[in-house]
Length: 209
Image 1 (tube, rainbow, N blue to C red):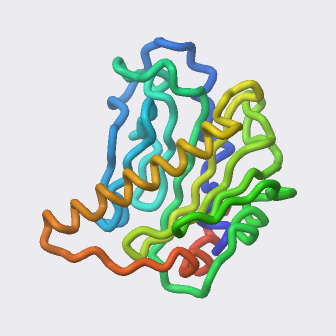
Image 2: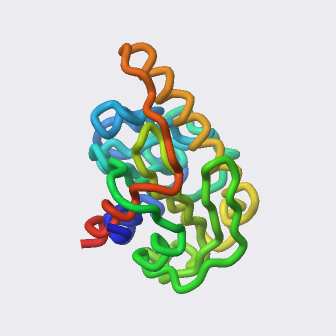
Image 3: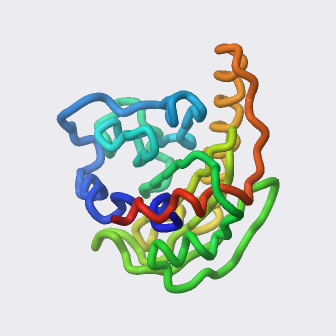
């Protein structure tokens, strides 16, 4: 299961980083939010980032700076990078960030943070593309009984590899949590209780296949 939530397409979906800033891209416009897991989670990117609609599945999304996806109003001051978000219904035993990192072939975990139900750490692994550093961020959390595994990759000199990347992940999680609760209220379905330590193990095994 740990293999399922971490990076189902990390190696094949990241070629857009070769797109020049401001260049037009074919296909649908990038999204500023998306309903996932049949409405259980409303995914909201961090400031300056959008969701690539071509990558979007009920359990997976790829996010990048809006201008690299062809968005006309992308925040150019946002650091260049790419995020992957994998989701699964929480049904299994507790899962650690170490399990996710191992499934994602992360060779080591460095500085770690565990705040308000979010496990986050610097990780080192084989880069999914030549444009990205082997150093990146990994995080796991839970929203509405849905487990989220998050990875943030960036070029070597990008501020996203530092504290700014950590802030981006936490901002995305907070915004997604708020939007998901709002959606639950609007639809009359109460938000489910969350336990950030449970469920990911039961889903992660398939996303790397």
